Structures are given as structure tokens and as C-alpha cells.
Length: 512
Image (cartoon, helix red, strand yellow):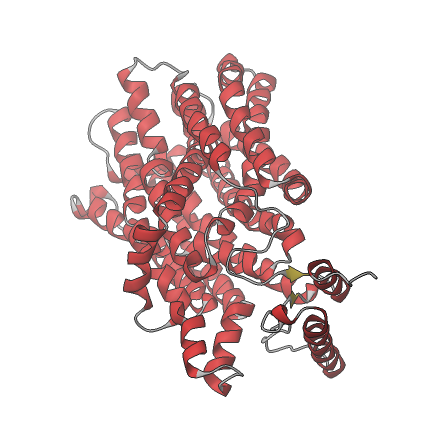
């Protein structure tokens, strides 16, 4: 029963001895109370270890999404640098098309990194994705402009966007699986919310730097050389993220597998092979086939949930600055400033939403968010359309409050859809298929639809409502998983008292 840390700074000797005594106690109680639980380990988490793991995963995730976010906030400038020919709309469409290209390879990244994470370990894969993302982003900042090398400039941009997309394919599934498998069952929503906190921190950092550069340099300098600076920062940030991810502990499930491989464990070779077959060398091909043949109903549900969630997410956090600038002719700095304020508010309430999902369930919070987008999208965009700062802030607040219900809940709800033996791979494939088809294409589709419908500024509201309706149906079809063990995993509790209570509840003393 893994409870300790494998970092370079292990717990004191007395703490390790206490944990060993707790393991003996729980197994002894389990066997005395109910012989059927003889081979069941109740995972008792060490809160210090869980917090270190959550912090490292969330901060690494922030680094990833900083790299990914700066492209969307510089979309207008990038269109001028790499696609200078034609109208402003054609240039912006080309820029968003390149943004969407990275999402085309995300399912491939998920299909590769998911099974790999089950075979060689979560933290190794998360470190690898960090390296690839940082290198891809850094190289974008070094590409010569179209004026310098012509056709090869957008070709190189697309190439490095593909590198970014492939690496990101292994990011969310790995990080959310890592936190979900570490967190105690009754606090999975709370700890999972910090993964999305990392996403918002990354987006906020990217928006803040772009805002600072736009304010201090001006349009001419930004097009000439200023746009490169945020991409070049990715190198040092990548080293920080890599350090954090190398320091991560493996999840208890993978530690148990490594212990069985090294020491032989207490099981026979046949039992060990059966229990950890999902971690074998032949696992990737087997698991991908199993995911599509045995998990397809849940996979479709996952795609519907993630598709609705990502359309609303990318609409607000990625597309909205361009909408305010290009469509409503707001100053670029004003649009970014309003978005920064919105994200700051979301970060303040995100962990509270995670706690609420632990207390009241994942479905009520998710349904609130989806219905919020469906009902409030038109009023929100009507407010934004007014153009005054209070009206724009009010519209953004309506959208943000709906989004935070999804942000604070989804990272705990999605890993619980799948059993342990296919969780990383299934979630990575399902999540990235949805993001590829719906999330990354959101800015491109909305921009194209607005062009078709004569610059109708309400098109984003209608598109958001359609996505939210799909989300409402998907949430209605999912099962509630709050305060329950992950499928295929033993119960996970925060204290030894909870473990004893759980065992006694499963096997009450007979009364005479």
C-alpha cells in the first residue's frame, strides 16, 4: 500500500515507521473484520505527498498552457507576420487555421503518450511532454518572417505547431489521471480543481505578457520583433517545468507495479501478470484496441462532455480577445485587460467549486455550467455588444461563472469515467479527439461563420448554445462518481480513522 514519497527529500524515519505500522493495522483489521478484503489494500494518502504531487502537476500544466496560450493572444499579429497577403479577415483566418492545425495531431499524441504512461510511468511521460512543448514554442519565436524567407515561414510555423499539439496530447490525460489516482476519494474534486488552476495561471501569464508588450511597444514594434519575446521565454520556463515534473512521485498504482517487478511481491507470477497486464510491453496496441471495442460508449460520452466544455472554454479564454479587438474594434490592451480580470475572478472561486462538487456531486455542478451557457449566452453577448466597459465586464462575468462550474469539476469527473487499466489511454484519446474536433477549431469556425453571416456579432452566442445543449444531454447520461473509489482502484482515504470506518461499514459486527 504505497503511501510515502519517492522524492529526494523523503519523510523522516519516524514518519516512515508510522506509515508502516498503519499499513499493518489496516490489513490486520481488514482480515479480522472481513476475510473477503484480505487482498484489498485501502490506500491511505499522505496529505503532504498529495499536495506536492498536485502542486507539481498544476504548475507544470501552467507552463504548458502558457506556451499554448500566447499563440491565441497574438493571433492578429501572427497573421500579419506570417500571412501578410490578402484582407485582414483572410490573414486572421490563416492564423486561426494554423492554431487549429496543432489540434489535428493531439489525438495521435494522446494515443501515443497514454499507453506509454502506463508502461514507463506517469512522471516520465509528463516530463517528455514538457520538453517537447518548450522546444516547439521556443522554435516558433526563432522563425524568420514571411518577408524574410517567404513560403517557408508559414511552413515552419505549422511544423512547430504540430510539435506543440503532439506533446499536448499527452498532457491533460496524464496530469488529471495523476491527480485523480493520488487524491482521496472524498477530496478528488478539490484537488482536481488545481489542475485547471494551472491552466488559468498559464493563460493569465500569457495574456499579461502580451498586454505588457502591446502597451509598451506599439503595433509596429510588435509586428517587427516584439511578438517573438513571449515565445522565447518558453525556454527558461520549460526548464522550470521539467524540474518540477522530474521531482514528481509516481502514483500508488505504478509504485505497486514497480515493487512487484523488483521484489516479486506476494503474488504469483500469473497473478502479477494478470493484475498489471495493462503495463506490459505489448500494452499500447492492445489497449488502443480495447478502448475502441470495449469502452466505446463511455468514450462517446467523454467526447460529448469534453467537446461541449472545450467549445465554451476556448470561446471565452482564447477567442474572446480577438472578438473584442477584431469584431467590436476594442483596443487590444482593453480586451486583454478585461479577460485578465475575468480569469483572476475564476481562479479565486475555482477551488470552492471543486469542494462543492465533492459535497453535492459532479453532475449538479456540470449541469449548472452547461445550462448557464445555454441560458445566458445571448444575454452575455448582448451586454458585450453594448461596448461600454461595465457592459462588457458584465457579459464576461456571466460567461465566466458558467465556465467555472465546468473548470472546477471536469478534471475530477473525466478520469472517473474509465477503469484503472485503461484510464490514461482512454482519457487521453477521448479528450484529445474532442479537443481536436471542437475545441481547437472554435476560433476558426466562429470567425468563418461570422464572415458568412455578414459579421453578425451574435454568432458566438448561438455556437456556444449549441455546444451547451450537447453538454446538457451528456451530463444527464453520465453516472455520479463523487466520493466513490475510481473504477478498478481500491478505496482511497485521507486518514487511518476513515479506513477503519470503511472496513467496519463493509463488515458490521454481528449482534446477538
